Amino acid sequence: MTTVFLILAFIVFLIGSISLLRLPDVYTRLHATALGDTLGIGLVALALMFSTSSVSIRLKLLLILVIFWLINPTISHLTAKVALLHGTCPYNKELIQRRQQNDSRNR
Image 1 (cartoon, rainbow, N blue to C red):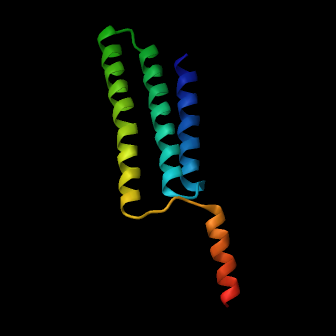
Image 2 (cartoon, helix red, strand yellow; image 1 turned 120 degrees about the horizontal axis):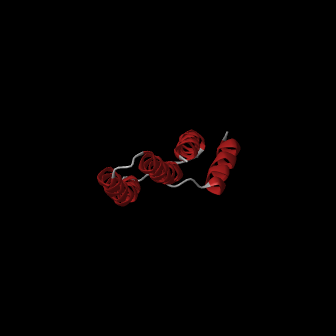
Image 3 (cartoon, rainbow, N blue to C red; image 1 turned 60 degrees about the vertical axis):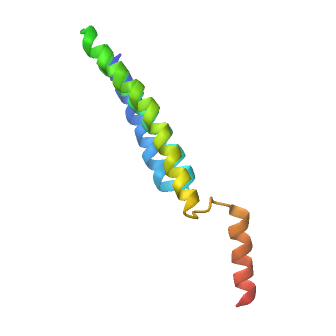
């Protein structure tokens, strides 16, 4: 059971890493990596919980998991808000196509 959770966590982390490289703007990248990290850490914690027989270690892992699940979305939200306040525009495919058409007409 531990191996299954670790393999799933690896897949989730891999998808999050690929999305960091492939997605168009900071907001979608942040969203994908935050989801991947949160789910991946949850799966790793579950794998570790299944691998140990100590109740105290399981409770500590659960506490770490709860803290991570509270902090990670909050930090992601704050990062996106700061990016928006600093003027980082979300990706808009139609706007970019219009700008490219206007640039080609002006040349």
